[in-house]
Length: 115
Image (cartoon, rainbow, N blue to C red; front, side):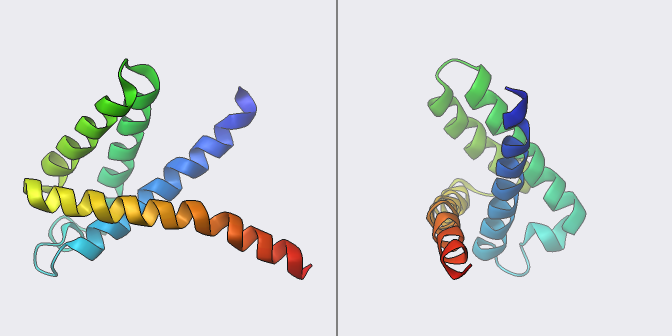
């Protein structure tokens, strides 16, 4: 179990970056949390939300349903987004997560083929 800790740290950090990019892409320039709250504060909020969703999904019953609720309410509470904006951030986050999920193995495959 201990050997999988670095993998989960990497997953949490990648998901934090994906969430930050999703917020950046969906928000307008004047309502961007990066502009309103600052870069450091926004990245800390993203990390806190990703860690909370990870632990809720891992340790609470009904994990997948619980994570959706925590994720949506977390975006609304931490970043002062409306429900529609929260859905847009969630959609962007889902698309970027899938791109990363499928892009990393392809990148590693091409790097391995070039060596």
